[in-house]
Image: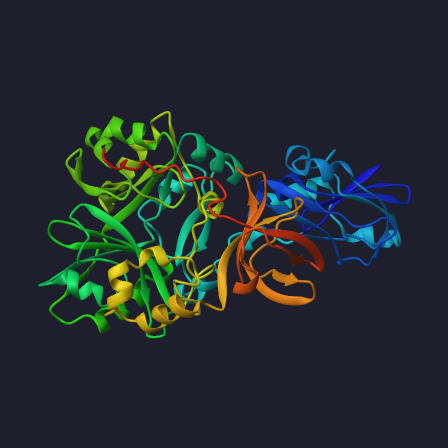
Length: 123
Length: 385
C-alpha cells in the first residue's frame, strides 16, 4: 500500500483500486478543534477537485476536495460520533472516506510523504 | 482542503483596515507564547494559542487573559461634558456616578447602531471604550456632533487587557489587592509597580472579570505577571467569540449594525426611562416609534438540533418562508451543541418557536432560546449590601 499527499493537505492510501482519503496532521492542526464532519454518501461520484466533505471546526467550515476522481464506497461512520478523531488521529483512525479509483493516472502528480513534509516545512 | 486563513470572519473590518495589519504592543509577546496571528480590525491578533476549546473552558473554569488593545480608548473633557455626551448617547449619562461604567450605543440620525461601547465617569473625564474596527469612524462622528468646547482624547498609548473567568478576582487581587473591592460595572484608578492603571469590573464573556487600561510600555510586564499566576492563561480571539456568543452578547458588525435599532436588537436596557421619554439624543425618533409600535424584526438566540453548526449568513425559514438570517453561530463548547444568534421577523420571535435554519442545502431544526445560553456570573453588588 502506498500513501500520497496533495498540496490541499489530504492524504490518500492506495490499496488496489481503493483509495482511503483523510486530512493531514498539519491540516487538523491548522483547523483546530473539529466539531463536525460532513461525509459523502456511499455511491457519490466525484471528479478530482470536487467538494467531497466539509470539516467544521469551532470557528469555521472548510471544504475537503476529492483528491482524485472516483466513487465513494465507504465513509468513516466513527466520525459522526467522534469528530475529534480527526484531531487526535488524523492520518489513521480519522480517515474520511474510501473511493473506488476512476483513473490511477491521477495519482502521478501527487507527492510522496517526504515531498509533502518538505512542502509543509516551506509554508 | 480550504486553508483556514478565513477562520475568523473579519468582513466588516478588513476593508476599513487597509492591506497591512498594524502591530499591537503585545505582538511579540503573543508570538512568543505560540499565538496564531490573524488580521482582525486592522491589527495582527492571536486567534488562539493551544486551541479554542481548551481556551474557552479554561476561561469558564479559571481565568483567561485577552489582549484587546485594538479597541479604542477615548477621553472626553470640557464644561458640561456629561450633558454633551447625552446628545450622542441614549443612556443616562447625567446620572452616571463617578467610578461607574455603563453600556451604551452610538446611534445615527435614523436610530441605526454606529457602535456599541462602555462609558465611565472618572474624576477628571469621561472614558469610553469602543470597538477596534469602528474607532476611527466613531471619533470622526463624535468630533462632528460635539461642540468644540469638548476635548476628545484618543488614548493611543494605552493598551487594554481583559482578565475573565471565575478566578479572575483572586488572580488580580494577588497583584493588586484593592481590586477586590470592585463590583460589576464599577471602575477606578489603581497603581501596579509604579504604573497607573484604570480598571473596570466588566467584560465580554459573561464571567466575572476585569478590563485593565495600562500604558503600552507597561503592558508586557503586566501580561507576564498575570500569566505567571496559576489561574491565568492567555486566550485568543476564537474563544473570545465563542464565550461572548454563549453569553448572548452581540458582536458589532455582525449581530448589530447601522441597519438595526437598539429596540429591535434587544438592547433597550441601554436606554434609561428618562431618556426614552425626554429624548434629546440622535436617533430618538426611531426609538420612540419602535417602543410604541414594535420593531419589524428582533435579535434572538437559537439552539440548533444536531451537531452541525449554523454560521453567519445561514437563512432562517418558517416552512417555505424566509423569515430571518443567522448573524453569529458556531459550536458552543460550554453548551456542548451548536448555538446561534440571528434576526427573525417579530411575529415569529417568541421563545420556544421552532424554525428551520438552512446549512448547505440542509434544513436543521432551530428553536428560539432565551439568552444568555450560559448564565452570567458577574460579581454584582447585592441590593442593600
